[in-house]
Amino acid sequence: MPPGQITSESNFAHDNLVIKWTAPENTHVTKYEVTIDGTTKETSNKSSSISFGVTSLVPGKYYDVEIVTVSGTGEVKKSSPYN
View (cartoon, rainbow, N blue to C red):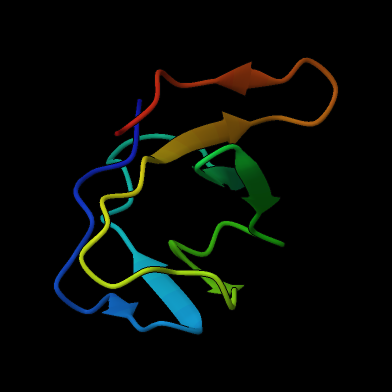
């Protein structure tokens, strides 16, 4: 199952971006892959938040954010993305 909505606990600043989202229910989560405008980071565990230290965020600009749930280590299964 894909992750849920990005929550209001997220923090958006010009030099740092912390994204928090709702974890999917009844789904085994190994980690998440979060992509912002083509740059992908993975959570180190099943934590439903991630921090991007970036210096080039532009206030008022819209960014594409995609979060994918990853389950398993041998045969990896990925959810459809939450955009």
